[in-house]
Image (cartoon, one colour):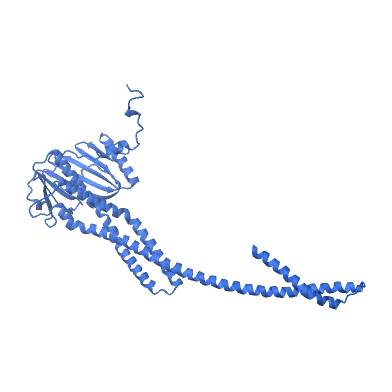
Length: 429
């Protein structure tokens, strides 16, 4: 019984993602596995639409075999299909199906991978097929790996202080399967399940990490061409003949920057994903704790020798893109600065020319004003002459010629004063 003074967790408003976050740590538990067991995994690249279709198809497959279907939106589910367990997993960009064939694999890889796969339930077409793995957990002597693997590519290592030995050659069979053997001597069912799960993940993430290589190979000549173009622009910048040349160079740099940005944006996710997958592989190998065996390279050393060059290619082209972007930015800023300086010089020259024109207009205006005073005064004196003549005809004692002569300076002075007042009033506004 609770009251207002005691805490009731049921009254809390739960975050909408709290349950999913709590379940995430337990979303993909290891399956306990006894020896012998054969695991066949298939991985597909899936977008959002394909992932939803794959989930619905898997639910239909479960229903057809009377198995419990996954919850709506579930990312992981294990279904019992007769004598077979099928683990369904969905990740950000791929979906995997792992058939767990308990009791099979005592004679490793018999029947062969392709023949055994063709007896499994159909999965439909979830997306682009990327991964096929055939892993056998068997109690066999760990001395005759070359009967199952190519000796030129064979990698092997002991684990758990010799409790088991794992081996593979990372070469696809005629049916496209990568075969992995775990020779069990003293593994517990939980340790065996964890080891097999990590080995499946290592091969799955190895393929996913390699997806960045074709993109890096596609971008290598494009990046080299852009680097050469930037070099040419930089060389021509030192010989630029002025604003017109600089503007042309800036246009070329702008096009170069746009092309580089398009390539960088298109490859950013793929390269970032490759780095992330490569880090997961490193963590899985570290968790396994490989111990060298005889003359064979371990999985980690084989990966470092054969797989690391591909990752270095990816990282190198990614660094070249970033370095090129910085150089293009600096070159663009330099050209913009030169163009701004040239424009400022042109503006200064334009202002000087405008000042010259203003002075000429002022002189012209002053000249016009002088002529205007004379012209207006002439008309004023003419009008005054008519007045003087009329006065004389009216009997006034006045000589019109003398009166007009006397009116000339007064008219000039008056007109000049009026024009000056008008100009001063305009200048105040």
